[in-house]
Each structure stands twice: as structure tokens, then as C-alpha cells.
Image (cartoon, rainbow, N blue to C red; front, side):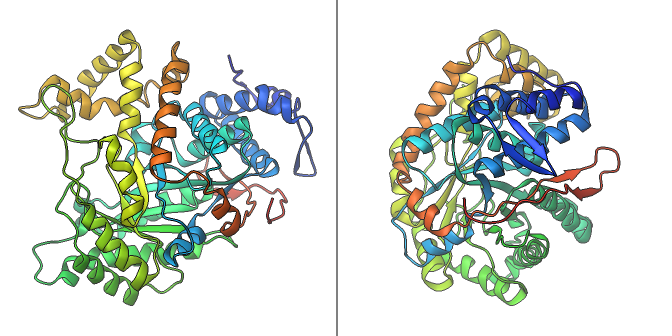
Length: 472
């Protein structure tokens, strides 16, 4: 069992077994010891210590050790621009939302990546997931980088903010306040090493307006404002990869005309370069799938023509990487090799992995979570829903309050084995095997310092540590 440091003295005792810190520089003196046990103790301390200052110090150490080790938080922007220019083979980058057992699940993704020479793969977490999984960006990034160290992965690590979504209700009540809220989360994420951000004001699209440009107005306006904001705050040497969205997932299918209207407004409004690198569209899916009364998921008709037609225009006319598919993890397995064939540069996968975790979780533990949800989220149990439907929709809320229990499950390895098998299958279908050559070619590794959030003042201050930027 990993050790959780209670104070800074205990934390230093853990770190000193494998790492030397002098003159604000980190040097790994025993890589075997680091990977064998020290990194486990560090990440468990960063996530579960009851001392906030100790947690922050552990996160700082993980980031700096990762930089020294060669697992570098990076932006996928330059690779996506190469895709837009037609300089790569057809593949679809998997972006995986990890809601529970984050460190261990990320380890399994890195195992698959190392085994199959994969460079194009993304770890992401959505704005909503940050809240209900109790994983702020700094914790999530720490889990991912610690997993890379544990598995011996060296190279770019792509961490992404997914669906940094505007609330239509809050926006139309106070546009500036909602914009500042999204900006604050974005800054927190970038400071934590999220150099890939998906902005989502698609909730503001108004289909009652007469013209497509008017329909997309608040969407392109806020995407442009967020692009300018990100370019102002991004670290030197990094072009954060920015994603946009034209159709709210679960709504009507997107069209080429809508995309072109969005781009017309966006390009006229945005001031700073470069702009977005990809575009999310609606193809007929829904996040999490559509649960039937018995708790199983309904089959969804996915329109690949939407992905292909908009993707081709995105690449040829605007130089973007292509389209992005959301809500895909519950789709039939036989569909996944079609995404690379239809100009889909990225695919977001979440609920299918959550389902594996719940399917294999011990019944007693699962029922404990279900009772908690029934007691605390009754207001989400809509009229006409069966218990199975309600629990399928709401059980994601069991990750945050039961985080430690998930991390220490007795049959954790059984669950992780099943997840690893699924990763391997999907990544092969998405044609990302042997994409390391592209990340080696297009992604420059920039070692950036950890930005520490004071637990007392909530002000942001950069840790004073001198690390040189450059390829590793």
C-alpha cells in the first residue's frame, strides 16, 4: 500500500529516496526506486493527504520530476496542423475521460501506448467531471504525469480540458460573468499543464434566428474571445490546441453550412493567431448513450457523412485537423475503424470505460454507491424513469465521494485488465498504432514549471525553479 505523507518532513523523506533537490533543481538519482515506490507515494499524497500544503508540494514535485524524467505536458496543436495539411496517415486521436482510479487507468493507457508505439493519445476531463469526480486540474494532471513516470513513458503527454462549456441560462443572465467563469477555469487548467482546451459555447446557438450566421453568433463570438484569452495567457513556446463546437451534443445533426457560417463569424472576430485546430460536430450520438428502461443502452444511428463532409471542408478550406466525435464510447465496436476513414481527427471516449468499471465492481461496493446516489440526487430522478435508467445516468456521481475506495478496490487489477484490453482494441481500430513518428516529428517538448495555487489566498504564484526548455 502506498504511503501518504502527513507533513512536509515525511514528504521529503519519501522523495529523498530517489530524487535530489538542490538550488531549486530536481535530479533523479535512482530511477528504479522512483518508479518502484516513490512515485506511488507521491501521487497518493497529492490526492489523499489531509494537509493541503503537503498536497500542493507533492503535485509540484511530480511535475518537476516528470520534466526531468522526460514525460512532458504538451500541446497537440502542431500535429493537428500537420494533419490539416495532409502530412500524416489517416488516424483518429483517442481522447479518454478518466473519472475514477485515474492514476491506475492512465498507467494502462501508457502501457498500451508504449507497446504499440503510439504518440497520438489524449487524457481529458470535462468541466462537469471536474466537479463530480472531485478532481481539480492540478490533481488530474499530477495523476497522468505520475502514471507516465511509473510506466517509463518519455515524450509528449497531452492533457485536455474537455467541454469547457458555457451555461446558456447563466450567460443570458450575465454574459460577462459567465465568460469570466470559463476564463478562470481555463487559466487554472493551463497552469496545471492542460495545453489542450476544448471551448464549448455551442449551448448558446439559437436556432430560432433566421440566418445561420445569427444562429451561431454567441457561439463564434465567445469562441473567439476565449481564443484571444488563451493566446494571452499561454506559456511562451506553447500554442495551446483549441477546439470549438458547432452543434450541441445530443441535439440536431450539424451541417457544412452551419460550420462555414461559424467559421465566417469566428475568423472575422478573433484577433490572435493561431486559431482553433479542430471542430466538434453533432452526428446523432448522445453523451453516455441513451439508457433503456432495463438499464441497457439504445443503439444510435451515427451519420458518418456529417463527419466526412464537414471534415473535408475543415481541412481543405481552413487547414484544421478535421472533425471531433463526442459521445462515442458506447457505440458498437465495429464502427470505430470508420472514424479515421471519415476525416475524424479526434474522438472522445468516457462512459464505455465507466461502464466496465461498474460492471466489474464488487456488488456490495456498487450498492453502497447506488444508495448514496438515491439519497443525495433524488431531484435528478425524472418522472417515468426506472431505477435502472436513473442509476445509469447518475452513477458517475459515485466517483468523487468514493474516490479512495475506487483507488483501493480489492479487484482493481481485474478492472484494469479489462480496461487495458479495451484501450488496445479501440486504439488499433482508430489507427493510432505507430503514430509516435508524428509526435516525434511535430511536437517540440517544452519543460514548463508547476504553477502553485496557494491554499490560503487562492492567488496564483509560479514556483521558482529553473528548468530549461527544449527537446528531451
